[in-house]
Image (cartoon, rainbow, N blue to C red; front, side, top):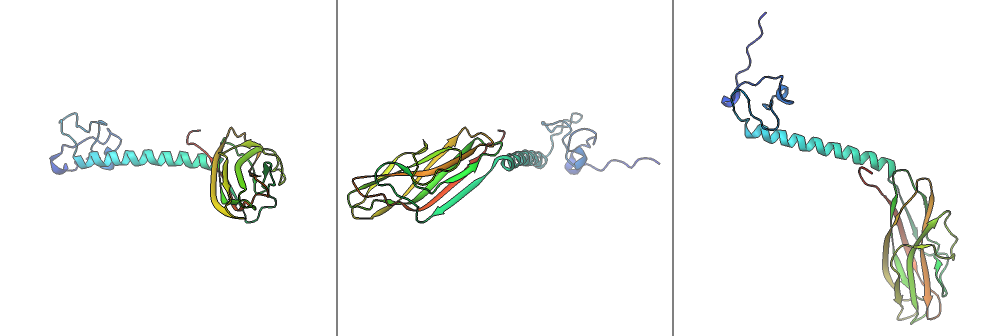
Length: 215
């Protein structure tokens, strides 16, 4: 039985062999990518075909990037949070851990963690100054009132104009060089100068693992 004749070209475009071009068999008229020209007739593919091909290529590339990012996130993403309205200790002078920290084990594929904290800070005595800074280290979370570890953020301070006056505060920083399988901790270190003790409360601490596509 003889093969049926090829379909009539649309819009006066010459018939193109379906054996050539990635999308010819799907109704596209692009046997020679990316020029979109029929080498026999020299006819340029319609603008709509060229637009669809470009759009399809962009979507395909985006899908590949999303799939890659999802695989990286699944391997290394983690997060932890802790809310402490009333910390178990306060400083009466020197710098100590407040006891509101988080301990975590770094997963594979993740070598950095973003740490953010906010709350209220002040001093028990009028005219005294409360100080605070984020700190981190390896191993188990230190007991409240322990010595500081590695400094993670800028030191902030607030002088209470009246007894127990407070002000909102927030701090953040990035812990780099995490080793997979190693335990780490982060906590807020506080101090107080001018007499009395610090009055740091309503703590909200968050840790987020940072990952990069292709890492």
